[in-house]
Image 1 (cartoon, rainbow over the protein chains, first blue to last red):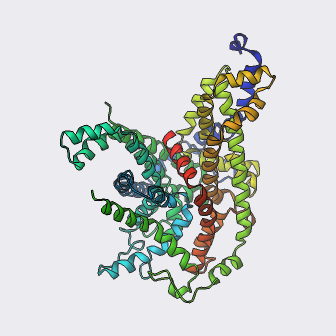
Image 2: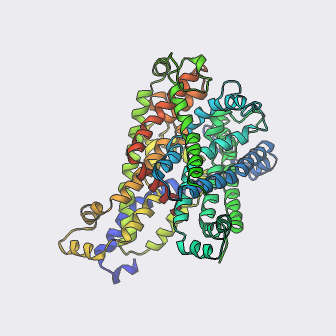
Image 3: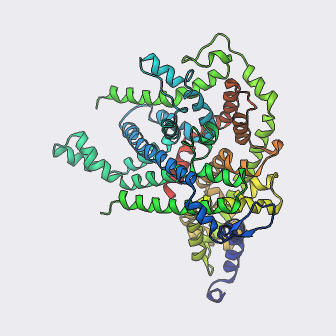
Length: 292
Length: 269
C-alpha cells in the first residue's frame, strides 16, 4: 500500500479492483486445489466417510503399483510413436505448402479440419476405420493384397494404432506452426546457398532445419503435454485393453478416483505424474533446443 | 521438386484427412450391413441411424446444454480476461508484477494436480450435477488474460489519456475506447475458449451424471461406450456426426480465424 502514495490514486484503486476477479478465482480454483492436493496425498478418503491420515502409505503403494507403471510405460510408448511421426509428416506437408502453389489456403484448411473436431468424434470414427473385418483400413489393405492388421484387438498394435489416430487428429496444428516458422526464414539464406551450389536437400538440412529449432522445441513440448493427457481415446475405444496395453496414466488416475473412489491415492498419482511431465519436458528442452 | 509431384502429394494428404469424414457421413445414411465398405455411395440411403439416435438419447437437450455452457464460459473468459488484462497492462499498482508472474506460473501447472481437489470442491459446494460445475471453473483463463494484456500494451497511451480528460473511468475506457479496437484479440480468445469448452469431455464426465444436464460430447461418449447404442455402428456414427457438424459449419465460414487463433495460442504457450 506504500507504493500508492507516489502514483495517481484513482488508477491504483482501479488496478486492485480490476484484478480482483482473478485473485478471487486463483484462491478458489488454483490455490486451494494445489494446497489441498498436498494434504490429500497423506490421507485415505472416499469423500463420503471422514478422511483418514495414513502418512506416506499412498507413496508406498504407488511405488509398488505395477498397473500404474504399466500405464506410464504405455503413455511413453504412445509418445515415442506420436512425436516422431507427427514431426516428420507435419514438416513434410508444411514444406510442400510453403512452395509457390495454388489452393494453399484450401489444403491448409483441409489438414486443419480434424484439429477443430472433438476427440470423441475422431475416436468413434477411427474405431470403425480400425475394425478388423469391416474397417476401411483393413479393406484397403486387403484390396492391395496385404494382410489385415489387428489394429485395436492385438496388445502390440493397440497403442500404436491410437498414436496414429492422435497424430492424424493433431497434425494440422503442427503444420501451421511449422508454416509460421518457415515463413520467418529469410529468403537470402536460400539465395546464397543456391549460389554456392547447394542442392535442395542440403538446403533443407543446413538452413531450414536449424532455423526451425524453436518451432521444433514447441512442437515436441506441446505434443508431449497433449500425449500425457491421453484419456478420451482409450476410454472410448478400448477401455484400456487389450491386456492393459492402452491403459494411459490419465485413464488409470480417472479409474482410481471415480471408479474406485480412492481420492487420496488418485491425488498422489496426479502429483507424481505432473512432476514426471515437468521432468520429461525439461529433458526434452535440454536435448532439442540449440543455443547459438 | 516438380510442381506436379507437389500437387500429387498434397492431394494424397488431403484425401487422408477428408475421406474418413466423408466416409463417416455416408455411413450414417447406409444400412448397417453396408457400413463395412470402401465406397461412399449406396442405393439404400435412409435416415434410420439418426432416428435411432433421437429415440434413444435426448441429444437436442445436450446440444442446448453445450451451447449454454460454452456460451457462458466464452463470454466470461472474454469479459474477465479483458478486465484483468487491462489492469495488468495499463494500470500501475503495487503487486502487479507479482500477479503477472503468478498467472504465468499457473500456466505450467499440469491439470493432473488440481483435477481431484477440484472435483472434491464441486462436491463440497454441492455443484455436482449442476450447470455451475460446468461453467464457473472455466470462467477465467490465464491464457485469455495474457493475450488481452499483450494486445492492450500496444494501444497508444494518448487515446487513454484523452478519454481520462473527458472524465471516463477505467471500465468505460476499456469498453468504449479499447473494445472497438480489439476485435482480433476478442475473436482469438473467443474461438479458443469456445472450442476448448465445447470439446471438453473429461470434466463433464466427472461432475455430471444426470442425463438432462449432460453436454453434447459427454452424451455422445456415453452413448458410444455405455452400450445404449446396442452396438449399432450407424447410430454411433450418426451421434458423432451430430456432434461434429455444428463446429465444422462454423469452421467452414471462419476457418482463417480458427487457424490463426489456434496457432497464436500454440505459439504463445
